[in-house]
Length: 142
Image 1: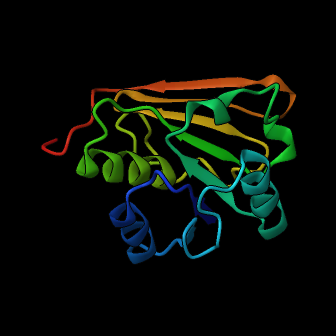
Image 2: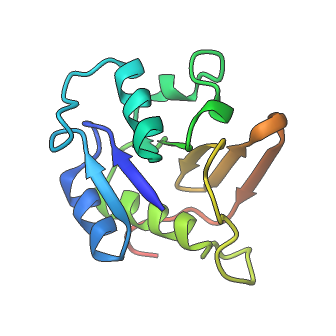
């Protein structure tokens, strides 16, 4: 899977995802600092990348319909502690949530909007289907 990390994503999150084998570009190296939302989405579509962001307005399906994208991951964690963010992303991308018994469930993020929290995720896909996974709260300690 290929990702673009929005400018509000910690650089250490980007380097962590690269270390564990994901193809990740960040906004700075992609000349997208202070770019408009539309420019960011155009870049993601052109490069077939899923956007990773903390900006909740990317979860607005009227403004950014997920079916027109290669996926949007919105991280909703308060406070956004680095180790927690890394852990939640890694668990989601690997399919390693405690309630799952098998390997990665998410084969492609194309057309999906995912909202990640410490307690799980919500995913909306093409056709408006909705999936939710809740598990124990994730923290850097557990």
